[in-house]
Image (cartoon, rainbow, N blue to C red; front, side, top):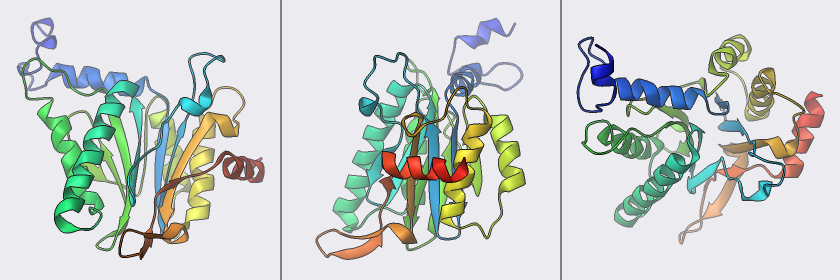
Length: 247
């Protein structure tokens, strides 16, 4: 009976499920592990960066994407789907800035991305996006914010979250280690330790990608030369230093 509904995106099964969305979540759970942690003064998002072959140029792989000055995101799941969502998110951020002359609040951008993902669960001739996203940002309204967006288009704000292959173990680890007084430096260490729990092989600066935003990443931005926290990726040297401190 279930097979009759498993190939249709727009038809509910008798149990009230859209089975293709569950399959999309299976695609996410086969992707590499990604984590996000909210600290008192910022956000860190981190993910494993693995190439299909040792011959691939690692510098061309991007797992952490900057959407606009104050927002970045990572994914677990299908890379090509992520590229499409990054492009749509950047266009939405630019459209907001053109109207309001400032960077979008994190929640507004999350809603835009989630709306795109939801639309692909309700239209004929398309399939759901095979990715879950962790979106990190900082704005004047809510300060640091961390959101998770799933293939169904649902989104929630999190204090700490994990997606991908080792999601269950990573969340269990975060539940033990997380505390609300944690600062950004501690959050970066915790993120690396969380990924290390399920990491296969030797963890090096080339096998991790980390993005941060917070009061320690303040920079001058825009025509008004306004000081705001800026999202940025950690350099290889910075990641190497963090790994050395943990070892």
